Length: 129
Image (cartoon, rainbow, N blue to C red; front, side, top):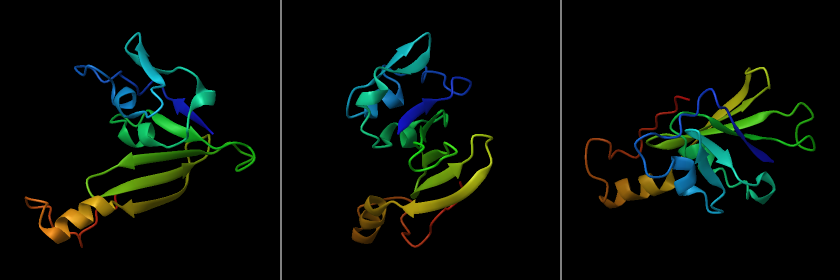
């Protein structure tokens, strides 16, 4: 698999010392060049999807290899307040499937009372993608 950067959407996270993808990548594979994210060496990517979930501009996605998807579909993940939203998309941009996974850490914090504020009901799940 490989991380795909949509340079039309990437703005390099202005105002931050490091871009969100730079900051979260466990392999330290991202850097900025000309106000855009760049992946140093795609072959070194661990496919953990951390950068995909962290990107505030939805500029990163994972391209599925032909062994998994002959049509080279993309898997896009977006971290939301209470869940992670996933979309499986064709190259044309058509959404084939979407689903949501509730964040367990947020649920656990709500149950133990560690989560403060109005969003502390772990039974409410926003599944908008």
